[in-house]
Amino acid sequence: MNSSAERILGVKAIDTIERNCKELFKNPIAKLLKEGKFIERGEVQYKLPDGRDLWLGLTFSPLRDSEGKEIGNILVFTDLTELKALESQAELRKRLSSLGEMSAGIAHELRNPLAVIAGYTKLLSRKADVALLPTVEAISREIEVMDRIISDFLSFARPVELTLSKINLGEIISSCVSSIAGVSGSVEVLLDIDKSVFISGDEILLRQAFTNLIQNAADAMKDGGKLSFGYAKTGSYAEITVSDTGHGIPEGMKDKIFLPFYTTKEKGTGLGLAIVHKIITSHAGTIHVDSTSSGTTFRLRLPKN
Image 1 (cartoon, rainbow, N blue to C red):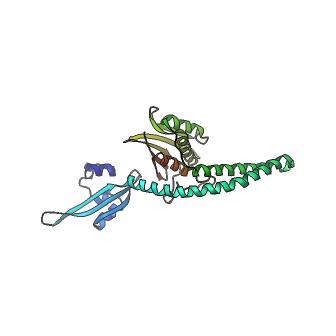
Image 2 (cartoon, helix red, strand yellow):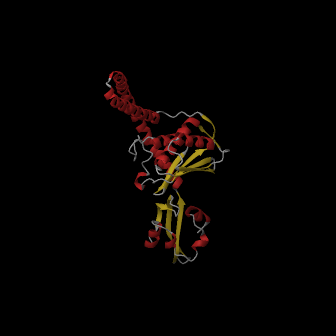
Image 3 (spheres, one colour):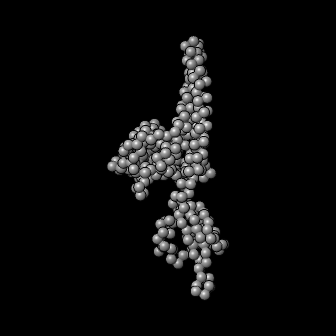
C-alpha cells in the first residue's frame, strides 16, 4: 500500500502488514477481492471508517511473474469524489435553472390575486364584528406566509448578480448565528474560524446562504445539540464546514435536498437549501453534504479570491 492509498483510505500501511486484505476493506471492494473478479476499469462508492463516502475509480488485475505465473493481485484506485461532486453540481445547476424560470412565472401569477385578497382582508378587519376578528387575523397571517413563500420563489428564480468585496468569514458567520432565534441556550455553538480569515464574495448573498444553513441546522436540533463551524485552506479555495448533531438526512434523500420545493419539514417551501446551492455555485464554489443518523455536515468550497 503506497502513500496515496494511505491518504485516500485513511489507514497506515504499517497497520496492514500480515492482515488479510479482505478484512481491511469494506464492501464493495471486499466483495470484489473475495470473488476474485478482475476489472479493467470501474467506479464504486466506498464508505470510510469515519462515515464519509468516496467515489473510487479502480482497476483490479492479476500480478504475474516473468514466466506469466499469477503470484498475486494488484488493486489500483483513484479518488473520484471531487470529480463526481463537480459533475453532480453541474447537472443540478442545469435542473435548478429550468425550475427557477418556472417558479418565477408561478410566483408572479400568484402575487396579483394575493394582493387583492390582502386588500379585501384589510377592509374586512375594519368592518367585521368583534367575534369575527380572530378569523380575519388568521387569514391575514396566512396571507403573510404566502407572500413570504412567493418572495422565496422570486429570490430563487432571480439571476444572481455578484457585488464582490473582501469579507471577514468568522465575523459574517458569527453575525448570522446571532440572527437565528432557534440557536439559543440549548444549542452549543463552536466557531473554529479565525477572525483573520478573509474571502472575496457577495456579503449579502453569503449572509443569506449561511443563515439558511444555520436555520436548517437549528430545525434539526429542536431538543438541543452542537453546531460547529470549521475552516481549512485547500489550494486557492476556502473550505468551510457547517456541522450539526441533529437527526441527520436519510440516505435516499441526500441527493434531493438541493432541489427546490423538496422538504421533509411540516412547514417550509423547500427552497432554503436550493437558494444556498445557487449562491455558492454562483461564486464558482461547490457544496457537498455528509450525513449520518447522528448529524449532518455541509462542506462549502469558495474561491479565496
